[in-house]
Amino acid sequence: MRTEVADQTPHEQVVRCHDATTGLVGFIAVHSTALGPALGGTRFYPYASEADALGDALRLSRAMSYKNALAGLDHGGGKAVIIGDPSLDKTEDLLRAYGRHVEALGGRYVTAADAGTSVADMDLVAGTSRWVTGRSPEYGGCGDSSLLTAYGLFQGMRAAAEVRWGEPTLAGRTVGVCGVGKVGTHLVGHLIGDGATVVVTDIDAGAVARVLTAHPGVTAVADAAALVRATLDVYAPCALGGALDDDTAAALTAAVVCGAANNQLAHPAVARALAARGILYAPDFVVNAGGVIQVADELTGFSMRRARAKAARIFATTRDVLLTAARTGVLPVTAAEALAESRMAAGPWATTLFPGLAAGPRVSAQPQVPLP
Ligand code: NAD
Image (cartoon, rainbow, N blue to C red; front, side, top):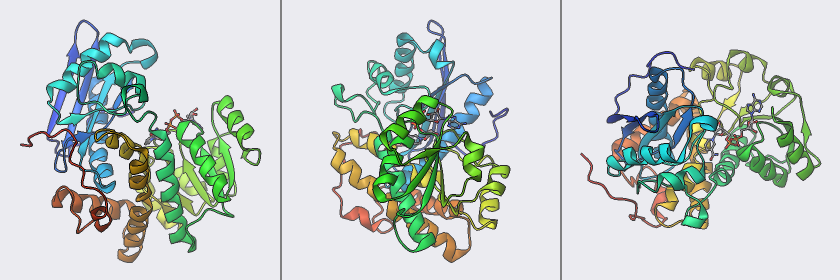
């Protein structure tokens, strides 16, 4: 939990959303539209203060700029936060009121689901705004984005395996998955299919039981601390942010960390602590972009085949980032940020930086808005 607005990076626009009738209080942060309309989810969370909520929106929207740029999307970064307990405070009227704020931005910000909001919520927000994606298939949407998040994560993990061990496979490796919710469960399926040994943990015993039933070869340990200390080749944090702290970095047995959770590093120095122990960290915003690729594709008329092909490129991007970091002696996070910044500076469809994109269809049916 943040206690102050610490992220002072320049954002293009920040909007406070308020609706007295429904109790809506939140923020929409547009970090950048350099590559196109800002795209990022709406988080519904019981922040302790407006300052905490604003700080989170600023930090998360900046991260979306980097994630979207590295994913090869013609989208800038944005994020919205709504203050409240989603199980108590999230009402249809509140979501519709929120949609009116999204609509007022005229397409500079496109929203989607995030922690505390769902695909069904996006259907409601779409009642008052055109700038919503990640909707349910009944409304022509792409549905649950965890499918391609897990697929892209698996591709990133294969790339990390190649950089670390010379082969782009997890076959014969032991992978620890912390959190077998939507993404973690799909990831386990990919790993088993690839021939990995999988160990899982989750605070939800039912989630663990479902995975063990589906995959009898998988084993479980009591909690995240036990998983971190288990003998692993790869550790995959797929639960909450902040999973990698100083204690975790010191205790990990794995040689590779590659997971879906956003903002895995409890603080930036953990990346250096991991590197100092020879642990290869595949940055979260590089490897977990499959979900935003999936929801971005919906804006052009969703094609799972096309979206999956774009998510497959996470393999090449992760490999580029990790090899560049090794070659230039910087942290993978630093190499990833530099690559994202170069793409943002170059503008949309910079095929010189992303030659692989030249082979794909140039899709221009996204909502077009005049940029300032
Ligand atoms: P989810 O809520 O479906 O699953 C999270 C799982 O983690 C749950 O089963 C929960 O019980 C478990 N968990 C929570 N705290 C835990 C703990 N301390 N130890 C062990 N398990 C714990 O969420 P998800 O959609 O699978 O997303 C997982 C992570 O990936 C989140 O951090 C999310 O922000 C991130 N992410 C998700 C997507 C997506 O498309 N769903 C995209 C990008 C990033």
